Picture 1 (cartoon, rainbow, N blue to C red):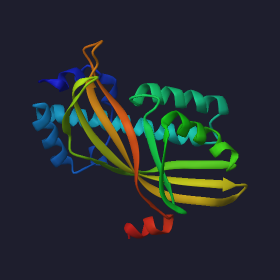
Picture 2 (cartoon, helix red, strand yellow):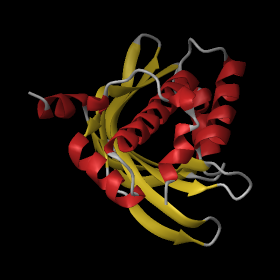
Picture 3 (cartoon, rainbow, N blue to C red):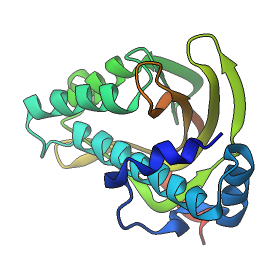
Length: 216
């Protein structure tokens, strides 16, 4: 099956980027070649497509939470991000905090609303950003889905910084390893394959000090 041929039609995604952003480059390319029965060149282009998609999602999340983004624009970006990059408006976002071992989950629509409203006014300002060039793409697994038929699923891990402020004071901050779970499937209404986020899982939450200690 020549899946990558469909992707080559989406030329606008294949812009300049550093392939080093995806961890285990050769191993990942080899896995893609095996699963999609494609050349290494096509595998690299798929990795660029995935990396570009991931970067856009990260940037949009940062902008939804930022006070520098006009309030109305925050909700517009949130809606566009869900429609473009998520499987559905009910895709789950799993959250943790330093004060609790409990994992909470909310639909992506509710999560983006929390960010756009500074957690319903809990903070005066929220800042979210992701560790630059720290992305790891997991192995691709093939599944049969009742809705889509044959699908391919994989995850991308990225560290997310979260800072909440009241006035000039930082009242909360953490760094969480987020796993973006993707599904890749063929749209029955077109000839194109779709890449969507099924869920975002919080795998590990650390204080900034603990996190920085990992990289010394």
